[in-house]
Image 1 (cartoon, rainbow, N blue to C red):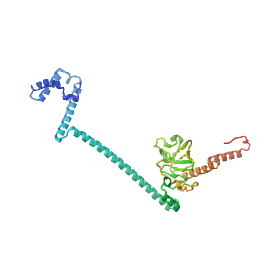
Image 2: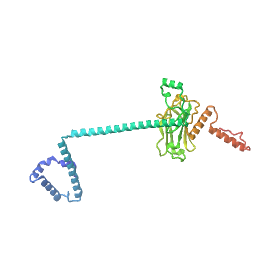
Image 3: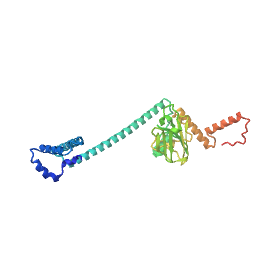
Image 4: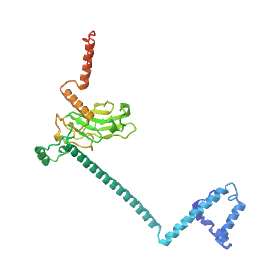
Length: 335
């Protein structure tokens, strides 16, 4: 069998015999030579097929015992006992935990400061655009200001609505009392410019209170809790111009304005929502066109009239009928 490191402590029942043998030698090392000589002459321990392994085991064991001896001597010189070692270990763990907490707090503070700076930069950019005439200046109504001073409720906080919704760094959104629409540019999803957006590359999951949108191979752009509940059975999403994802969700409560789409995202001031809000100048051309089309469709639906898509189909059918007068459409039924 091999040597175990604990075997160096020996077996006390042989102490008397071994001590008697040792007293017949001039030194402990001479006694060890006698033991090794015996093992080489009478066993295969150090000259048989396992001699190489046994020598290496002996060397490793002696090396370990030397380390143990040195540590014990150091403790003795420094006046350290085992309890002190345990206290030292606990203190070290405590220190490491404190360092980790300080690092996390520092990172959180830096993140908050970074967001604050970014918000200030966006505000400066907005003001610069206003001064340059690129954005309409927000005219403050004294009447609104008075009501703001009187009421600090949540519905009175947030940015001025654009098309009854707003713009975040991830998406643009608009709403009516009963419906919410979200428009997402393909590049926001992580698709390179010019690459067409395909439905097969998208994961769009909606429950009554949660929404997740993810491009294959990318991190989810949206994965969070909706501001209010929606009806999942009427949920529709489409891709427009191979470059924008458009979602339409019916509100569960069709008689309230939302201040945001996803909890934690920038909020709007719902007191400033206008049924016919036309301040779309903050939107880029393509997004503005999409929002205007959606608002037109919402008005048409409310009046029981065809949407832009339905109107387009009707116009195409009318043109086809005019081009083919020989065909009888009188018995055809169209939806």
